[in-house]
Image (cartoon, rainbow, N blue to C red; front, top):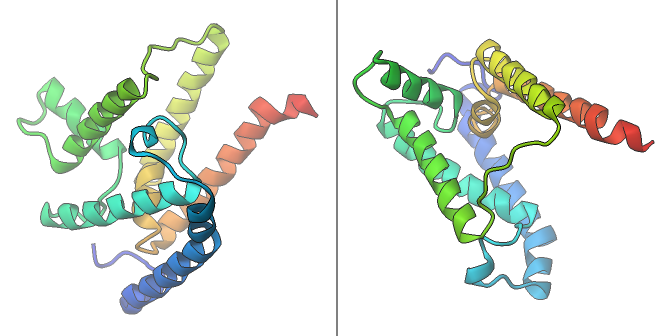
Length: 195
């Protein structure tokens, strides 16, 4: 949608390009070069150990670039997002549609890919919380995230990983409040008792 409010207006692409070049240069200088001197990750360990945050960011960035190109070819302008994909799958299952769209296939790929690599790393198993309160809290949290995704016209993935690179003002505001909300809940659930 060409009418969305973005920082930089019609020169948005120049602003994004400048931010991207400066960001990549700083990250390479500050994190990649020192890490290349001190740590090596073998191909067999790449899915078994946690990645440094900067490496994860680079990989997600490249996935985002590929998703932007393939999403545009499918006629969409928001390449990464989960909520609409699940909605498409649900519509297909209950008979509302006869085909599955691009975003639904992406969600199916995420689930299958997560299964394959967690199985490969020896991490796959069904986990059920022992405390029934946790199940209730997880349900309430999921309900709140779903409600927020509908109100914000996109989930956290869509707003942050698709909206921020486009410098969408609505996505930036939504993303800031998603992060603040996550910090507050993390403090309430995990850190408050430690003080």
